[in-house]
Length: 130
Image: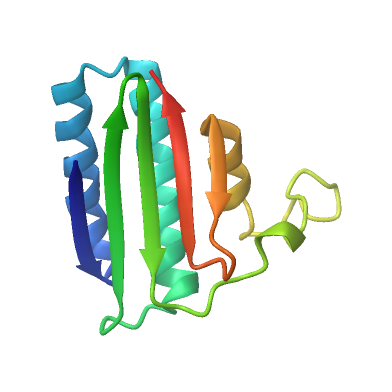
């Protein structure tokens, strides 16, 4: 449906947010679901920029949006080496509560109806029902 590729500049998040706004309005996505999509997409792109591409503005982040029936999918891919998405510390564990990082993937998992990663961990696909 739509795709956007940005360099790893945190200021480019606004462009992605605007596209989420536009697509959500075009598809008539309810506000509650729109909020979940926006927050999850911003988290995923932020992670791709800061952690995946290590803030290297020469590296790109691609965001693909697809809609089919009542399903809206967001796929975020970076040029980094990926990460072990199954071995992240639990941010709700009292030992991790005060950590400044480590909540993005937890938030994405909580808001999306389903989430999956490619084998290397440099691509995440989030599914939202509306």
